[in-house]
Image (cartoon, rainbow, N blue to C red; front, side):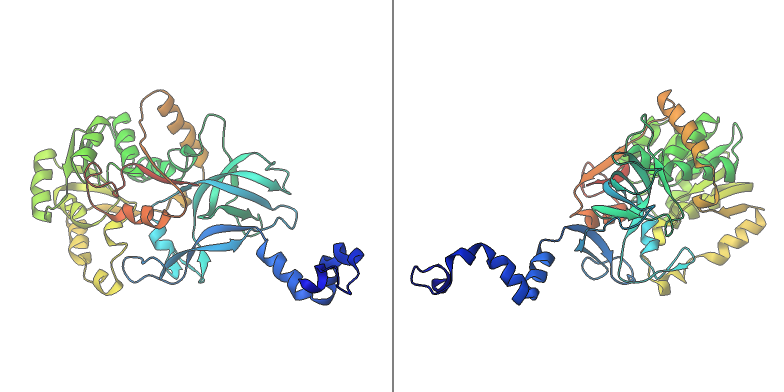
Length: 387
């Protein structure tokens, strides 16, 4: 400091404005360091390894600072994420083998999200447009059509960004196709729905009622059961703290003529009770198995596969698992669902949580059993992170 700024310094004072340039010439590593420290960054949730059982914060998933991606070629779009959908299926995507595809580590967690286009070199998606698609649990996502075959969808004016990841998103399509295309309900039949207060289950309940079914739901806690009944279900069984035999007896009382169709979101004791009460030639749509998502493989091998198959044989059941991606015409589902919503034939309940920092805790709330009135960490409704 004395050398450069003292009046007795031999350094020519007229060169002081050139110090940054001289620094860059003689000490280029300093310039590189300044560029690195001022580079724009974003927060992103990274998957570090395959969890064994319940995912652990900072071991299996961690919030990290990453460089903000740049639009560098034609076709790319930079999206600022505004709403990210937290869904039970995401637990499966943490595994190395996820839905038939091998995944690398570390990687940013992907899922269905909505956001705003902030930079674009793609004529289909202009700056300022609201879009939805399979994006990232991060503040920004760089969409590249070459590596993202699912594409983007522009959100219509009559659909909110949260609706675009709920009733007019993957959960809505799952409920619609899983019931109408897999189970093919008939008027007067009895439909059982597990996780009936959830994003998918609550829609299944209401679509079932629209099609003239008698509906029995399962949910965890009085608040959730009351909500399911408000949607039109004739009965809703609180499964918390009950054994398979207790649930079986309650279901017999709730559905004295037996179950014709079962929309299975959970597996576990609820599903075991339904199978005990299902009618001959009953149909089962297997959408999810959340009861087992955090079960280690060695324990999963001890579940009841053989008795279930024996019952399927004896009762001539049709049990069909499905992935919503096998149904291509999602717009058909969204148009009908949105129409029912506008006509007040369907209600939705959203559980919107603020901030990306706590997204891991929000995600884990999907797997907690409880009553939201007593436990604020329990999810109730379509779970969404608002960034």
